Length: 175
Image (cartoon, rainbow, N blue to C red; front, side, top):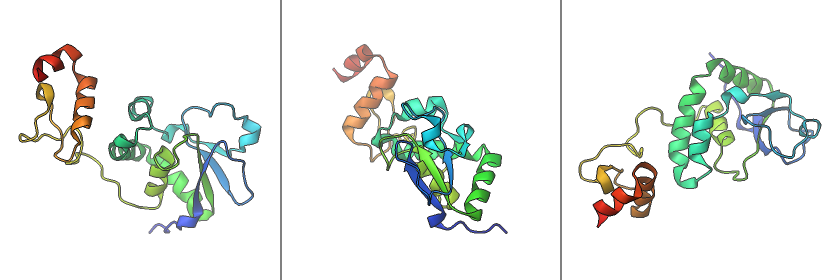
């Protein structure tokens, strides 16, 4: 049976913050090296870019808090595909303190937060989820035949339509 990881063993820190003596093993989990940070100053012990979100997922998310729940779900699926690296990070966290280093400005909505939750064994929904923007509901039809979950705000529905449908089609449907 695996040893449970104590929450105090996993810290989160921005790459732009200086390394501290209590950081333990510093692990950078971004696919790209943070801009303007010298490798010597970052004091990174391990660069785990293989467990970072895919380029497509990172670009889709764009650090938009409205996409946070779906990003968590999608990234969780990606992380679990890298079970070797996930196991390695769990082992490091069980042995002592680790600091997950990230470059995002938003400290509440980023890949490090999701990875920490997974390492601590907290549940993140995976697979098909009823609140997913791709959930099909007959009663909640949007513009141009797209469907949205019942709790999606109307402006979010319109914004998503522009992503999938040519604007002329939207005006034909709406007008």
